[in-house]
Structures are given as structure tokens and as C-alpha cells.
Length: 109
Image (cartoon, rainbow, N blue to C red; front, side, top):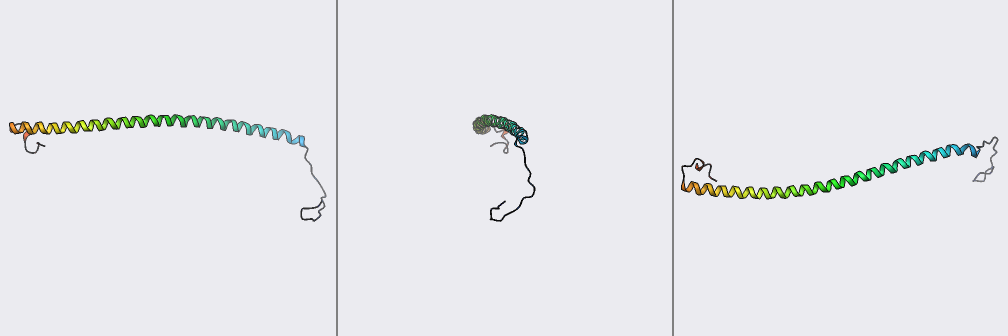
């Protein structure tokens, strides 16, 4: 036998493989790979569906958060108005009736 570099080598004993002996293991390996690919494809599809579900849930959560924030701001504004009105009413009442219990100097705003 002549090697790639030009040297000659003598082979004393050769081994061989019959192709028919390889067919069954190769077919089995291909079947296993196909089954694995199918399972992986199903896993990927399930994960994509879960991602879509979570994105939809996140969108609803963001909308609910924005709505709650707007409600909270409206209520904060209403509370501020009520506090101001209460202070004006106390001041008016205390200017006319200074003996009322809430007219003590530390309670008037």
C-alpha cells in the first residue's frame, strides 16, 4: 500500500465489515434520533405556547396596573381636596365658635 507521503507500507492482515451487519444498528439509531427530534419539537411547541400565555398574562397585568395607578391618583386627588375642604371648614367654624373641641390651637390646620 502506498501512503499519502509516497512511502510504501505492507499490510499483513486486513479486517472487513459486511455492510448488511451495519444496516440494523444504523436504522435503529435513525429511529431513536427521529423519536428524540419529535419529542424535542413537542417540547418546543409547548414552551412557545407557554411563552404566548405568559405574554398575554403580562399584558393584562400591565393594563390592570395602569388602571389601578390611575384610580389611585384620582383617589389621592380627591383625598387632598377633602383635606383642604376640611381645613377650611374647621377654620371657618373655629373663627365663629372658638370653644369647639377641635378648635384647640394644635388641631387647626
